[in-house]
Image (cartoon, rainbow, N blue to C red; front, side, top):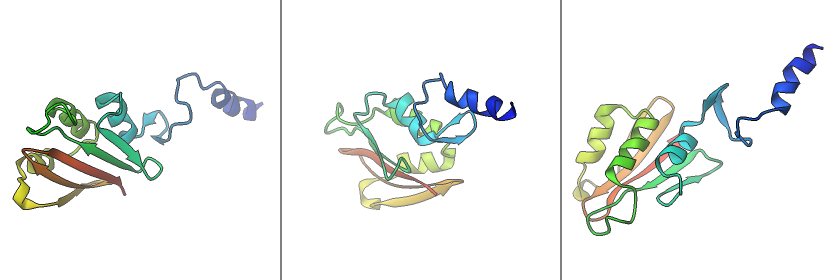
Length: 126
């Protein structure tokens, strides 16, 4: 009887999860959540390596319609709980700085920021 109590909820999973990996019970994976919430058409985000890497292409002045808008980029950073000091550093980076790296608990990010090309991120789950 106890086995039925444990197995039935898993068999009757009706929350639309479709086997998506979760961080813990009831909590959606932050990388998957960032894509679903901030770029639902997956035009400027891409998950790689079994959903452990998120690549984000931000919009730049040269092609403002290509890449995530600043508000959608902010959505990604907020969803991933990037510390404010790190996100400020990302936005203040300029082309001459090249590729930079930062981290926060559970994640590492590399990025470039160029006014013409936009802020581009590669977030890796540790």
